[in-house]
Image (cartoon, rainbow, N blue to C red):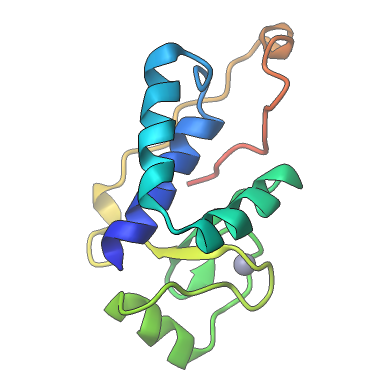
Amino acid sequence: MKDLIGTLVSLQTLELGPSSDSPENQASITRLRQKVPAQILGHYDRLMQRGKKGVSVVRHGVCSECHMRLASGTHAQLMRLEDIIICDSCGRYLFPADEPAPDAAPPPPPPPPKPAAEKKRRRKKTADVA
Ligand SMILES: [Zn+2]
């Protein structure tokens, strides 16, 4: 199951990335989509079409997108990676962050100072605060 949710995370990263329409990324996106069952991909796509992320990282038992704390049983289930878990609150697929080493995460890059550069990026989503 970790492979599957990992594939979704990779897919989302590519699709929300700055060069998602480049030929290389399009090829990667197509390849990743072929690995995901249609039912799961359908739910993911519905979220993405509503301008949401399809996958949310869980840190310390909290969904990073809607900031709701998971039920402890749900969190335990998530950490075991036995099944795909959906956030009760926002409906996103949940992906467990690597919690034992919080210091290992690099700081997020500073936001670009010039908003004019956003013009060609119509699909700009809320910045990932991670
Ligand atoms: Zn959520």
